[in-house]
Image (cartoon, rainbow, N blue to C red):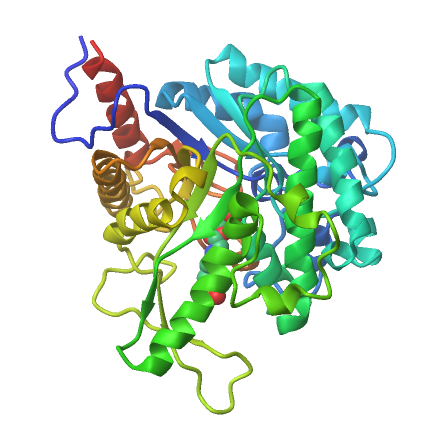
Length: 452
Ligand code: GBH
């Protein structure tokens, strides 16, 4: 008999989907196995000073070999869905031409194992690991990369559309543009600031072209995964409010408005004048079956100082607890964002999935082997309640995929930040479910029970 509590846990409506997320480069390892070509992250990690601990995703969680063990954990967790990404250079080692059979075979094994365990795959095509050969030709600055992406999408659609529940072409295009090509904190490490605008447009075209290719191959649910956050002005000062409005357009509007409305935010349109070609906006605006939101925390924005390169500035958001990464924990801002998103797009907004939401707390196993990550439980509890409140207020949120299933390679932070429900010992590859894992399992089980 199951004596675990069913009350005191956050409750979502019947049919609400609970899931977890990961991304290929962050967990798979096997960087050169079975014909995989190099990606921009393989290259970036090899450059001294790029990754805080000098590490790379060459081995990561060795999920490429341990996927069955990881899926067994998902089964134990009781999740109905798992968001994964496909490594483009595993499928096309140089980003173009025929598919690598061994690369496809890995995702066959993975997807079939998920389905055999009643976990529905949500598949992202591009979670930042561009084939290096395409970057050598200009990467996302080059419009031809969009054609390559459409071909890649067709390969995946033809092979997997019969088994994949949800598809996401591009993870967080705003992060790709800002961190990859504007500030250079991420691969490919370009520091173009506002000269990176073509990257945004090409990522949007890639999204649209992939949606068309996937549907042509039989995909029935295509969405997106956009990183969003409410932007709070540092003061009521006109200069702070103006800077906030501009950053909001850049971060929240620049990708959502073209995808859902077929146009750039008015304030940004001049920046795209010389980039947009006839028919592009219609290509970008494909009907979406769902809208994925990756949420971490709100931003406080102020007017820039005199010598600043940017017309806005990030200010520290004080008065909230912070994760081990230093990110403020503000569950109300998730509710606020969901309500704002609906207010902004109304009928143009499809059902929402939270495609990422989570936190870094870096504790490991104690002397009894227990990973006591109570702050993660508090984080998940409060954020699920924020979603539940938004749903009560009429926002159509269908699921919550927490970031992340397991500790993994956190990009420029290497292995120093742990977001997982499952602890990974990178020396031994031992998996240890944390207390938050059991808590999430209890939430899911209680939810199922309450359906009778
Ligand atoms: C997601 O990115 C990724 O999809 C996932 O792969 C990653 O592991 C996860 O989150 C955790 O980081 O103030 O300009 O420096 C989130 C990327 C990083 C975007 C922090 C906002 C702060 C922007 N976020 N970033 S800035």
